[in-house]
Length: 292
Image (tube, rainbow, N blue to C red):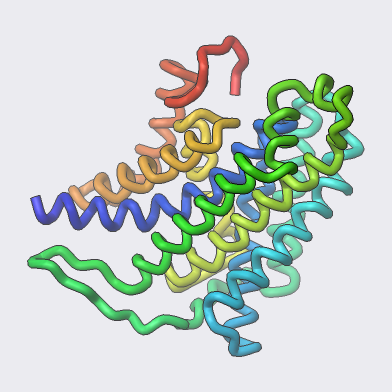
Protein backbone atom coordinates (compact mmCIF):
# COMPACT_ATOMS: atom_id res chain seq x y z
CA UNK A 1 0.00 0.00 0.00
CA UNK A 2 2.85 2.38 0.84
CA UNK A 3 4.42 1.64 -2.54
CA UNK A 4 1.15 2.51 -4.28
CA UNK A 5 0.84 5.81 -2.36
CA UNK A 6 4.45 6.62 -3.25
CA UNK A 7 3.72 6.08 -6.94
CA UNK A 8 0.61 8.23 -6.66
CA UNK A 9 2.75 11.09 -5.30
CA UNK A 10 5.26 10.61 -8.13
CA UNK A 11 2.42 10.44 -10.66
CA UNK A 12 0.81 13.64 -9.39
CA UNK A 13 4.17 15.44 -9.72
CA UNK A 14 4.56 14.30 -13.33
CA UNK A 15 0.86 14.79 -14.08
CA UNK A 16 1.07 18.40 -12.87
CA UNK A 17 3.46 19.17 -15.73
CA UNK A 18 1.29 17.33 -18.27
CA UNK A 19 -1.75 19.25 -17.05
CA UNK A 20 -0.08 22.65 -17.49
CA UNK A 21 0.87 21.85 -21.08
CA UNK A 22 -2.47 20.19 -21.85
CA UNK A 23 -4.29 23.38 -20.83
CA UNK A 24 -2.62 25.20 -23.72
CA UNK A 25 -3.77 22.56 -26.22
CA UNK A 26 -7.31 22.53 -24.90
CA UNK A 27 -7.81 26.32 -24.70
CA UNK A 28 -6.64 26.92 -28.27
CA UNK A 29 -8.77 24.03 -29.55
CA UNK A 30 -11.76 25.29 -27.58
CA UNK A 31 -11.54 28.74 -29.19
CA UNK A 32 -10.44 28.17 -32.81
CA UNK A 33 -10.61 24.36 -33.16
CA UNK A 34 -6.88 24.15 -33.90
CA UNK A 35 -4.65 21.34 -32.65
CA UNK A 36 -1.62 23.48 -32.01
CA UNK A 37 1.22 20.99 -32.33
CA UNK A 38 3.79 23.76 -31.91
CA UNK A 39 2.65 24.15 -28.30
CA UNK A 40 5.04 21.43 -27.12
CA UNK A 41 7.93 23.39 -28.60
CA UNK A 42 6.84 26.61 -26.93
CA UNK A 43 7.24 24.70 -23.68
CA UNK A 44 10.72 23.61 -24.86
CA UNK A 45 11.63 27.27 -25.48
CA UNK A 46 10.37 28.06 -21.96
CA UNK A 47 12.75 25.45 -20.55
CA UNK A 48 15.71 27.03 -22.36
CA UNK A 49 14.71 30.52 -21.18
CA UNK A 50 14.64 29.24 -17.59
CA UNK A 51 17.97 27.50 -18.14
CA UNK A 52 19.60 30.71 -19.38
CA UNK A 53 18.14 32.90 -16.63
CA UNK A 54 19.17 30.56 -13.82
CA UNK A 55 22.57 29.50 -15.15
CA UNK A 56 23.81 32.68 -16.85
CA UNK A 57 21.93 35.47 -15.05
CA UNK A 58 21.80 33.81 -11.63
CA UNK A 59 18.08 34.32 -11.05
CA UNK A 60 16.09 32.18 -8.62
CA UNK A 61 13.35 29.77 -9.58
CA UNK A 62 10.35 32.08 -9.19
CA UNK A 63 11.77 35.01 -11.22
CA UNK A 64 12.89 32.52 -13.88
CA UNK A 65 9.39 31.05 -14.10
CA UNK A 66 7.75 34.49 -14.33
CA UNK A 67 10.11 35.74 -17.06
CA UNK A 68 9.82 32.45 -18.94
CA UNK A 69 6.02 32.74 -18.81
CA UNK A 70 6.16 36.32 -20.12
CA UNK A 71 8.51 35.56 -23.01
CA UNK A 72 6.62 32.39 -23.97
CA UNK A 73 3.36 34.38 -23.94
CA UNK A 74 4.98 36.84 -26.37
CA UNK A 75 6.19 33.93 -28.52
CA UNK A 76 2.69 32.45 -28.55
CA UNK A 77 1.16 35.73 -29.75
CA UNK A 78 3.80 36.07 -32.49
CA UNK A 79 3.08 32.53 -33.70
CA UNK A 80 -0.65 33.22 -33.70
CA UNK A 81 -0.32 36.52 -35.58
CA UNK A 82 2.23 35.33 -38.14
CA UNK A 83 1.33 31.68 -38.76
CA UNK A 84 -2.29 31.09 -37.77
CA UNK A 85 -4.21 34.34 -38.22
CA UNK A 86 -3.62 34.53 -42.02
CA UNK A 87 -5.12 31.01 -42.27
CA UNK A 88 -8.26 31.79 -40.31
CA UNK A 89 -11.13 30.42 -42.37
CA UNK A 90 -8.84 27.96 -44.17
CA UNK A 91 -9.32 24.21 -43.96
CA UNK A 92 -8.33 22.43 -40.75
CA UNK A 93 -5.73 20.36 -42.56
CA UNK A 94 -4.02 23.58 -43.72
CA UNK A 95 -3.78 24.98 -40.19
CA UNK A 96 -2.71 21.59 -38.84
CA UNK A 97 0.14 21.34 -41.35
CA UNK A 98 1.13 24.91 -40.48
CA UNK A 99 1.23 24.00 -36.77
CA UNK A 100 3.52 21.06 -37.54
CA UNK A 101 5.70 23.36 -39.64
CA UNK A 102 5.97 25.88 -36.79
CA UNK A 103 6.90 23.03 -34.47
CA UNK A 104 9.80 21.93 -36.69
CA UNK A 105 10.85 25.55 -37.16
CA UNK A 106 11.16 26.11 -33.40
CA UNK A 107 13.06 22.84 -32.92
CA UNK A 108 15.57 23.62 -35.66
CA UNK A 109 16.06 27.21 -34.57
CA UNK A 110 16.88 25.96 -31.07
CA UNK A 111 19.28 23.33 -32.48
CA UNK A 112 20.96 26.05 -34.59
CA UNK A 113 21.46 28.45 -31.69
CA UNK A 114 21.94 26.02 -28.78
CA UNK A 115 23.12 22.86 -30.60
CA UNK A 116 21.40 19.50 -30.20
CA UNK A 117 23.42 18.69 -27.08
CA UNK A 118 21.49 17.73 -23.98
CA UNK A 119 22.16 20.21 -21.18
CA UNK A 120 22.04 19.75 -17.42
CA UNK A 121 19.46 22.06 -15.87
CA UNK A 122 20.99 24.11 -13.04
CA UNK A 123 19.91 23.25 -9.52
CA UNK A 124 17.93 26.00 -7.82
CA UNK A 125 16.36 24.12 -4.93
CA UNK A 126 17.85 22.23 -2.03
CA UNK A 127 16.69 18.69 -2.55
CA UNK A 128 15.23 18.12 0.91
CA UNK A 129 13.39 14.85 1.41
CA UNK A 130 10.40 14.49 3.75
CA UNK A 131 9.46 11.00 4.91
CA UNK A 132 6.44 9.36 6.51
CA UNK A 133 7.27 5.72 7.00
CA UNK A 134 8.48 4.46 3.63
CA UNK A 135 6.65 7.24 1.78
CA UNK A 136 8.84 10.14 0.69
CA UNK A 137 8.32 13.42 -1.12
CA UNK A 138 11.11 15.84 -2.00
CA UNK A 139 11.13 19.61 -2.18
CA UNK A 140 11.18 19.60 -6.00
CA UNK A 141 7.96 17.58 -6.15
CA UNK A 142 6.32 19.88 -3.60
CA UNK A 143 7.39 22.93 -5.65
CA UNK A 144 6.00 21.45 -8.87
CA UNK A 145 2.68 20.46 -7.30
CA UNK A 146 2.13 23.77 -5.46
CA UNK A 147 3.16 25.89 -8.47
CA UNK A 148 0.78 23.97 -10.72
CA UNK A 149 -2.13 24.26 -8.29
CA UNK A 150 -1.53 28.01 -7.95
CA UNK A 151 -1.38 28.56 -11.73
CA UNK A 152 -4.51 26.47 -12.27
CA UNK A 153 -6.36 28.48 -9.62
CA UNK A 154 -5.31 31.74 -11.29
CA UNK A 155 -6.41 30.38 -14.67
CA UNK A 156 -9.80 29.33 -13.30
CA UNK A 157 -10.26 32.79 -11.75
CA UNK A 158 -9.43 34.48 -15.06
CA UNK A 159 -11.75 32.22 -17.07
CA UNK A 160 -14.69 32.48 -14.65
CA UNK A 161 -14.56 36.03 -13.35
CA UNK A 162 -12.58 38.31 -15.68
CA UNK A 163 -14.12 40.15 -18.63
CA UNK A 164 -11.71 38.50 -21.06
CA UNK A 165 -12.44 35.09 -19.56
CA UNK A 166 -16.15 35.58 -20.14
CA UNK A 167 -15.37 36.66 -23.70
CA UNK A 168 -13.33 33.48 -24.17
CA UNK A 169 -16.26 31.36 -23.05
CA UNK A 170 -18.60 33.25 -25.39
CA UNK A 171 -16.27 32.82 -28.39
CA UNK A 172 -15.81 29.16 -27.52
CA UNK A 173 -19.58 28.65 -27.55
CA UNK A 174 -20.39 30.60 -30.75
CA UNK A 175 -17.74 32.76 -32.39
CA UNK A 176 -20.07 34.50 -34.84
CA UNK A 177 -22.66 35.34 -32.18
CA UNK A 178 -19.92 36.64 -29.89
CA UNK A 179 -18.66 38.85 -32.71
CA UNK A 180 -22.16 40.21 -33.30
CA UNK A 181 -22.38 41.04 -29.59
CA UNK A 182 -19.34 43.30 -29.94
CA UNK A 183 -16.63 40.97 -28.68
CA UNK A 184 -13.28 41.49 -30.41
CA UNK A 185 -12.56 37.91 -31.46
CA UNK A 186 -8.99 38.67 -32.57
CA UNK A 187 -8.10 39.95 -29.10
CA UNK A 188 -9.74 36.94 -27.47
CA UNK A 189 -7.76 34.51 -29.64
CA UNK A 190 -4.52 36.35 -28.91
CA UNK A 191 -5.30 36.32 -25.18
CA UNK A 192 -5.91 32.56 -25.38
CA UNK A 193 -2.44 32.07 -26.85
CA UNK A 194 -1.02 34.31 -24.11
CA UNK A 195 -2.54 32.14 -21.39
CA UNK A 196 -1.65 28.81 -22.96
CA UNK A 197 1.90 29.76 -23.89
CA UNK A 198 2.63 31.30 -20.48
CA UNK A 199 1.56 28.05 -18.79
CA UNK A 200 3.83 26.17 -21.21
CA UNK A 201 6.70 28.46 -20.20
CA UNK A 202 6.15 27.61 -16.54
CA UNK A 203 5.93 23.91 -17.39
CA UNK A 204 9.26 24.12 -19.25
CA UNK A 205 11.08 25.39 -16.17
CA UNK A 206 9.36 22.82 -13.93
CA UNK A 207 10.35 20.01 -16.29
CA UNK A 208 13.92 21.26 -16.09
CA UNK A 209 14.01 20.87 -12.31
CA UNK A 210 12.09 17.55 -12.51
CA UNK A 211 14.29 15.78 -15.08
CA UNK A 212 17.45 17.88 -14.53
CA UNK A 213 18.12 18.02 -18.28
CA UNK A 214 16.77 19.74 -21.39
CA UNK A 215 17.27 19.38 -25.15
CA UNK A 216 15.73 20.91 -28.30
CA UNK A 217 13.53 17.84 -28.97
CA UNK A 218 12.11 17.58 -25.45
CA UNK A 219 8.83 19.10 -26.60
CA UNK A 220 8.02 16.26 -29.00
CA UNK A 221 7.36 13.35 -26.65
CA UNK A 222 6.20 15.31 -23.64
CA UNK A 223 4.07 17.57 -25.84
CA UNK A 224 2.40 14.53 -27.41
CA UNK A 225 1.68 13.07 -23.98
CA UNK A 226 0.14 16.37 -22.90
CA UNK A 227 -1.97 16.29 -26.07
CA UNK A 228 -3.09 12.77 -25.14
CA UNK A 229 -3.99 14.13 -21.69
CA UNK A 230 -6.09 16.89 -23.28
CA UNK A 231 -7.92 14.36 -25.49
CA UNK A 232 -8.32 11.97 -22.54
CA UNK A 233 -10.02 14.61 -20.42
CA UNK A 234 -11.99 16.09 -23.32
CA UNK A 235 -10.14 18.50 -25.59
CA UNK A 236 -11.60 21.99 -25.42
CA UNK A 237 -12.66 21.52 -21.79
CA UNK A 238 -10.36 23.09 -19.19
CA UNK A 239 -11.18 20.81 -16.21
CA UNK A 240 -10.78 17.86 -18.59
CA UNK A 241 -7.22 18.91 -19.44
CA UNK A 242 -6.36 19.17 -15.74
CA UNK A 243 -7.82 15.77 -14.85
CA UNK A 244 -6.42 14.16 -18.01
CA UNK A 245 -2.94 15.44 -17.20
CA UNK A 246 -2.99 14.02 -13.70
CA UNK A 247 -4.42 10.69 -14.87
CA UNK A 248 -1.80 10.27 -17.60
CA UNK A 249 0.96 11.12 -15.13
CA UNK A 250 -0.31 8.63 -12.56
CA UNK A 251 -0.87 5.86 -15.11
CA UNK A 252 2.59 6.33 -16.64
CA UNK A 253 4.26 6.33 -13.23
CA UNK A 254 2.44 3.23 -12.03
CA UNK A 255 3.19 1.32 -15.25
CA UNK A 256 6.84 2.28 -14.97
CA UNK A 257 7.05 1.38 -11.27
CA UNK A 258 5.54 -2.09 -11.69
CA UNK A 259 7.90 -3.34 -14.38
CA UNK A 260 6.70 -1.56 -17.50
CA UNK A 261 9.28 1.20 -17.85
CA UNK A 262 10.20 -0.03 -21.34
CA UNK A 263 6.69 0.45 -22.68
CA UNK A 264 5.31 3.25 -20.50
CA UNK A 265 5.16 5.57 -23.53
CA UNK A 266 3.32 2.91 -25.54
CA UNK A 267 0.68 2.67 -22.81
CA UNK A 268 0.02 6.42 -23.06
CA UNK A 269 -0.47 6.22 -26.83
CA UNK A 270 -2.62 3.12 -26.39
CA UNK A 271 -4.85 5.22 -24.14
CA UNK A 272 -5.17 7.76 -26.97
CA UNK A 273 -6.23 5.06 -29.42
CA UNK A 274 -8.75 3.57 -26.99
CA UNK A 275 -10.22 6.97 -26.15
CA UNK A 276 -10.65 7.85 -29.83
CA UNK A 277 -12.37 4.51 -30.43
CA UNK A 278 -14.56 4.32 -27.34
CA UNK A 279 -15.26 7.95 -26.41
CA UNK A 280 -13.67 10.48 -28.78
CA UNK A 281 -15.06 13.38 -26.78
CA UNK A 282 -13.04 12.36 -23.71
CA UNK A 283 -14.05 11.96 -20.07
CA UNK A 284 -15.74 15.35 -19.70
CA UNK A 285 -16.76 15.84 -23.34
CA UNK A 286 -20.24 15.58 -24.73
CA UNK A 287 -20.98 13.00 -27.39
CA UNK A 288 -20.24 14.41 -30.82
CA UNK A 289 -19.70 13.05 -34.29
CA UNK A 290 -16.78 15.39 -34.84
CA UNK A 291 -13.37 13.71 -34.86
CA UNK A 292 -10.60 15.17 -32.74
